[in-house]
Amino acid sequence: MENSVNQMVVVVGPESEELDKVLTQLKIQVHRADTFKLFKKAFRKHRPGVLILHVNDSTSEELASQVLSHIRVGLQDKDTTFIVAHPPQHMPDALNWIEEYSIASFITLSSEKLAINQSVIERNIKAWQRFVQVTEQHQAESNLLMSVAHLHRNNNNVNEVMLQFMQALSSIACASAQCRIKINAQGEGTLTSYAPDINTLESALTQAFQLPTLPAYLHRALKEKKPQIDLLPSAEAFSLLGQILSLKLSSYLIFPIVVYGKVLELMVFFIDESAMESVSMRQIDVISKAAEQLTMLLERKESERRLKKQCTRLKSALIELKETQEQLAHSEKMATVGQFAAGIAHEINNPLSFVLSNFGSMDNYLDSILNLQNLHDQFLSAVEMGNQHRRDEIKDEITHYRGQSEIDFIYDDMREIVAQSQMGLSRVSEIIKDLQSFHGKSKQSQLDLKTLLAQSLTLLRSTEPSNIPIKTAFSHQSEIISNAGFIQQILTNLIKNAYQILEINAISEPIIEVSSEEQGDNLYISVKDNGPGISLEQQKRVFDPFYTTKTVGEGTGLGLAVSYNLSKRLGGSLLIDSQLNKYCKFTLVLPINADGSPH
Image 1 (tube, rainbow, N blue to C red):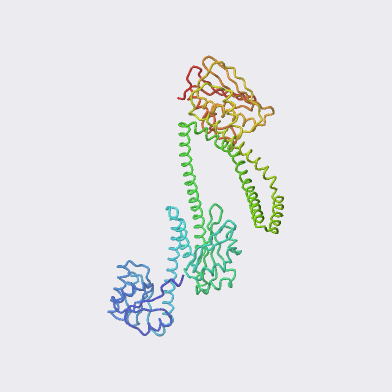
Image 2 (tube, helix red, strand yellow):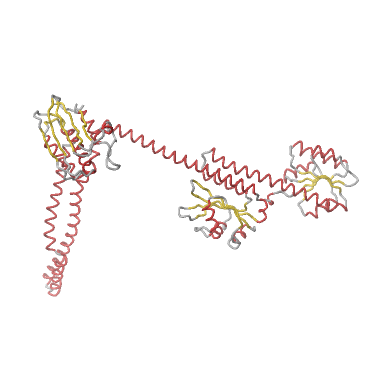
């Protein structure tokens, strides 16, 4: 800190041998000005803290008055220290000057007072240095707290604010060098920035810290999560650093940046031996308080960041939810198709995967057959050329290759592969035919509930493979004309739900009943299972979009909502009747005399 204090003294007035003797002994830098103009120029350029006014006659006394008035009145400078030096025979109006201009000291220039005069000037210079140090310390403390407040008030880049904080902390700690060490999840460190900007400083710091592992004193700060100040643990480890900086480093300050109990980085400051006396308990206390404030603000910033991120995600989810609800309201069929997309893909993928796998085997078999064909071509060529020896060699190769490649097995397996591939592709064709009757644009036709049930079970075979028996009881007599595709979608959803409930709850003797009956002008088609049932509270919500009684990952909550909307489009309704631990029954009510066309 002392190096930052301007130790120049400006002497205003005529030359004096006695004054020169005093200043020579002090070994300080002196600038002289014997006119007011030269004084103002020197004051602007050097900004000295101590001014010595040599007064030995009325002219020099008038010059001194001009200087005092300019500094104290004109510049409103109350801090500059004034010393008035005068010979014994000329004494200025001391009391008036002390009262009006706050003169620090008066010295009488004589040989016998040489030592006293040196002591007075030296004391005033040191007082000025202490004043500057205290001022700079207060400014550093203010900058430190302001950098924290800056983070509190602004949404600036956090890294920029942290650099400002580091610079302020470096000033208050009287540091000669500093660096930042980023800490990863494994507790290892990486040097991210350093000052002063010297090319060899980075390698010297890395070597001194032995990064990426952390020495004990850094690890202690990492563990205790609070500022540490102490003597350097090893002079040898930091000797190269001291040579680069041309300083005698003696102490360090480690400042951990903590957010939610986790140390994100360490700020390390190196203090020169000459600056150690400038570090006081007051500064350490300010640093500790700044650490607490910075931690709270960083945690608040992190909370705000997480909250904004969560808010953005919630907005996106809300938009997506609205889009899904609109899609569900305007296109129920697409929602139902989405329910079965994975199952249908799986059902088609099984035979296709089998066929593709067969093609792989066929490719290998063709390689074997082509290789054998190549040997036969070579054999025929040898026969035509009459090369008996080559013919016998190739014949042996053919015999050996047939045995090694199992060519007879290949011929038989190829026929089997072709037959199985035909069966697989036929299965794909059957699935597509079943799907053609499932879409919502199917024409109005007479309902055949047995056929619709069989097609629904075929669609469910891949996604819900089950041995649960299905009992049917169709008792209606009237011919019903309606949209078979919509009714099949409803049946498929209801049976799929029944399958899942019975299997999830491991019912000992599960059974599903599908029945129909006429009551007045309506046809009632019911799907009933002997599962655990649904409570009255849950029954109020089962037709709500995205509501499901299944565990997470077992259902989407769209099947019954889609079925309910389809029943309305058919001019009917979908009802629920259930008793806990006994049964659950869904009933599709359709008007018999209506044309059943979608609304």
